[in-house]
Amino acid sequence: MRNPLLLLLIVATTLSCTTEPKYDTIIRNGVIYDGSGDKPFSADIGINGDTIAVIGDLGNETATNEIDATGKAVSPGFINMLSWATESLIHDGRSQSDIRQGVTLEVMGEGTSMGPLNAKMKTEWQNGQGDIRYKIAWNTLGEYLKFLENKGVSCNVASFVGAGTVRTYVVGEDNREATAAEMDSMRLLVKQAMEEGAMGVGSSLIYPPDFFASTKELIALCTEVSRHGGMYISHLRSEGNNLDEAVEELITIAREAKVPAEIYHIKAVGKDNWHKMDGVIRRIEKARSEGLQVTADMYTYVAGATGLTSAFPPSLQDGGFGKLWQRLQEPAIRLQMQKIMRSNPEDWENLYYGAGTPENVLLLGFRQDSLKKFIGKTLAEVAKLRNKSPEETAIDLIVQDSTRIDVAFFFMTESNLKKEMVLPWVSFGSDAGSYTPEGVFLKSQPHPRSYGNFARVLGHYVRDKKILPLEKAIYKLAKLPATNLRLKKRGELKVGNYADVVIFDPEKVQDHATFDKPQQFATGVSDVFVNGTAVLKNGEHTNAKPGRFVKGPGYKDK
Image 1 (spheres, rainbow, N blue to C red):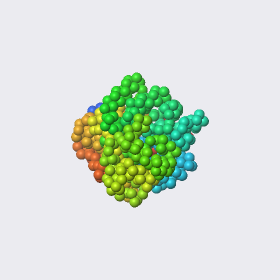
Image 2 (tube, one colour):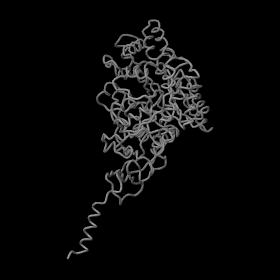
Image 3 (spheres, rainbow, N blue to C red):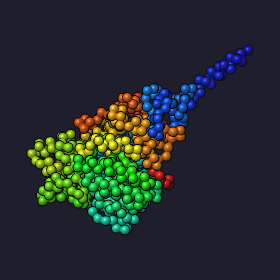
Image 4 (cartoon, rainbow, N blue to C red):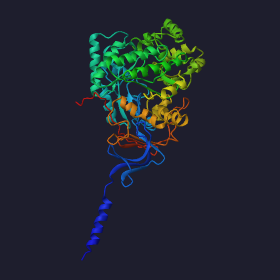
């Protein structure tokens, strides 16, 4: 006769051995910085599927994947408020340079967005592609973001619809006022973009064709954005001589359109304008005290990066780059532009003058292989090699490369960076793509912010310079931008939120990218989860691509 006690013991043992773990992932023993800005606390985090299931003591629970975060910080994923990963993610969806800094959401759309596109725009964009080549298989912004999600990306993606893109679609690149019928068409495009999931309208008013848009036109577009619960975000019309007036324009748009507004990469350009930052801060805080939702973002370097064509007046770019290229080959215009490049105009922003000297203009990228030898040199160095003036050299390079030429301008001051960084309404954006130091990405030299902007906050400014406490920095990297964007279930470690989670060592997190050697990954971030899936594990990319198209508040599921 069989022993019933023995049978009972066997059954119990079998059941205990086959019990499934309660969680997919448990992060144990970490110091939790939940994104609220409050002091950190010790706890475990349990993740199931794409969601944070529990935060607390999970000592008696098990998981399929367990991580010991002893001595490390655990935080929500960071949000890049100004991403130019529009093309880099098409080529390489791993988003390595940002993922390795803890960035889990890339927000695009500074003036130019990847939709809406008409047939003429698609042809021009296709023909104008540089080192990264791809087929434009979409027409609208929503279709592009869905394309990324379906193709596979490691990070989440979102975008504003570009005011310049909408204007080009309807008006073209000419310097003229939009007609009433054209305004109706532009508003309709904004409405469509908002209902597809755009975050709002983004403008870049220093550059054509955005420069050609009046304040009245922008208010009209933003009124449509307001109806859909979105926000306006802008590279101001001036960051130098007319900085105060440009800030006032943004505040006016916010007030008249009844829309939250954010300043892209807040800064004062040129030594003569550095002193204006204190007044700008006071003006924004006054607007906020009056009930307007005005915010800003920034990057953590004293050099910006843009096109060398920003040395020319917008009027010369009337009709688009093709017209500019033709004009720069006319002898009389070439002589006139060389003189203008050395001037300090009041009615447009001459970034070349703002840099102060051609030694402060670093060449970053060319399309023509014959010119790539100049990457990493200053304009002054190339001018000396060619035995020409820096201004004539700049014109020659643009004509020869048939592009605007990517450059870095050194025109800001560290003291202003520190002032901006401690403001409770300032978040962070790289103003760059997200790369891997291999293949096609090695054909150009990016700004180091591509690899170090966010790690630089945590390492250089928080730990080393003690500019602000770590919990406040994480708030500004995560919950603040999520709140500004009106995102649901992101930006904070909270039960029920999506599991976008970063684990890093506060004592070791460090940026390594420099202007001489920019393509170096940051270190100190060990693990990153996007929607509950590990994309970085023990410092190595897993090749997982769980990123999603994160939709804005006006999204309508059709």
